[in-house]
Length: 605
Image (tube, rainbow, N blue to C red):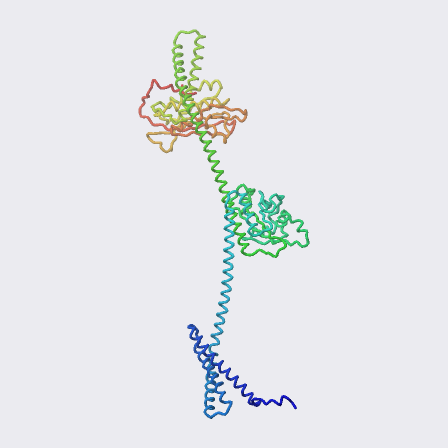
């Protein structure tokens, strides 16, 4: 007999299933009734939720479902017909509400999808903002490092200090294996290793600027990653002492970055005339190497930092060059000021010495010399033997010559000081030229020179001017023509210069031209003859002649509102000296005579 059959079940098997359904309906009803309470709480607390109607319908649907399950509890046992009617009405209402809820959900699904789309859009925007904030933080960090580096770089305005500071600070900030600077040579055809961070005493090496890697860097506007096999990278790594490490099979060189450094101001940096010769601004090359055997790569913000530092180095170098130029200009200006002050003192001392000398010449020599000349003239009037008269003539001739020399020196001094004033008086114009010709005729006769004078018929008889200065100019020019002409002739022509501004009934311009067949001048040397000293160079004999008086003549002609010039076809072809002076027409024939006035022909010859 089966022992299990000895225990009678509490309910039959069919009733047991119904009891299980009864318990399940209770829990389902409780769950259905709790959900509307939670939805109602959510609706009350959410003031901005846009689908309250849907939630109300959904809550009503759940309540009806719960009510249906509750009514089902009375359907388990015997029930009245009223219970069936209540169950039927509840199910009908549940069906209606469930259909309404389904239709409402169909309407709000697109809105829910759009909300989801907006959510994804906002999420993407949030991610993008996060990236931008990251970039901003990176840029802020980069800017902080750049400002720090710039401050360190600009602490000094010495070029070598700027470069050393740049290499050291970049190496510390970026954790570099090596950092160096390549500078162009004077010809601009090569880059030379100028300074290195790890190897300050590295052997100087050079790389042609036409190398593809260097041309790539010079042509870019920002830093460029170049191969580690590039010549500038190989030289840098070798200079840093990595030769043994490079020979290792496990050696992996770090990434190499190169950036150009423009020269904003060229001065004293072994650049020479590269910019003028090549038609563009030269560049230096900065090479930066990351540590080897690492996965580190150059990041964008590091490239930006290197570009900014390169620009700051260029500006700092420019400022340093300008400062050096300013210091040199200041030192040069101070030196020039000292030299000018010394020259001024020397000029003042020389001027005082000249004035003292002129005073001595005028008072201590000229006055006694005039007394000697007067006494000699009186001595000639006495009865003397022939030998005595010869001695007196010699004394008179030498005294007159010395007096003329003193007068010439005094005239030159007055002309240089612009203190010469014309002594205007009426004189006979033709007589002046005739007297001058008579004065130089003996010398021309001794040298067997043909001497001629041509006076235009329309020359005025009497004019108003400084006849003594005019005679001085005539004697200087005609005397030079006779003096420097060995053979041939000397001709003088005088005529009115017409068509000149200022020529009228009260004034006239006299043109005097002296032509000789002497040694002549080189055309390029003509301006030198009017300089102080009046030096004439005879290229044939390599001999200097001085004392031509042309500078004095030029000053006197300018004083008489005229001008003077020389024409010559070359050495040995003679010369023509022409001058024009302004005189006043004189209506009276009375010639003034000043007894204290120096004789005309005793002035200078």
